[in-house]
Image (tube, rainbow, N blue to C red; front, side, top):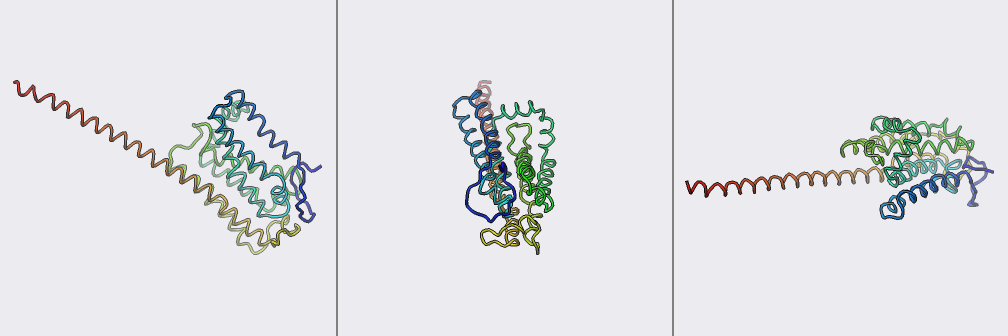
Length: 294
């Protein structure tokens, strides 16, 4: 029984394959969350909003891990392997983080005794370096060829991408406010550099390499009429540009909120000035009769 997606040498077919280990991992993500939410929050609108976001994240995780995407990425196409990375780090993980309430995140970190570790990892410089280190290591040809050849290694790659996504997004959208980076501009600079600019470097090597770098995908049965080189070039493009919609959308939201906060501050200052002016005018009007009687 194959419990996780792994490299196989058979020609690709659309016959579904069963991976019980993946189903178990999905249940481990979904069931404890659902039980905790029902016990603590009940069916209120705020809890439903959180549950919807978390459920969407788990669904994307399942889509990226199971057949057919998981099977194609594990041993047929480097481009699908890279697409999995984008689905994990840029969509599934942030959705699950947005769907995790503050009390739940705090309880998990405290029970696992990871709060101090999370505080260190939440520093933007640390998070950016670690995320891109994971990116480089898990896409290095030696790593991919070695790990994709067995189930445990393939599982380890997928798990590393989930952890990398958690590290990347903690300074941005952590459920714990104290772990989030302060200020809109620093957040924009961080996500632009860590999530967009730096991944373009290894993506460029894949795109412009003159020969296939991954033996796993070079020797795999050809799928969808893609040569090994064209498949690798497509993988490079996905690494460089796959996260762009998420990164730029995030920056646009931050820019909008920044403008709103500045407008709110300006409005409060204007109200204070108008209030001071009215008070000054009222004081001046009160002084006039006194001057006249004297």
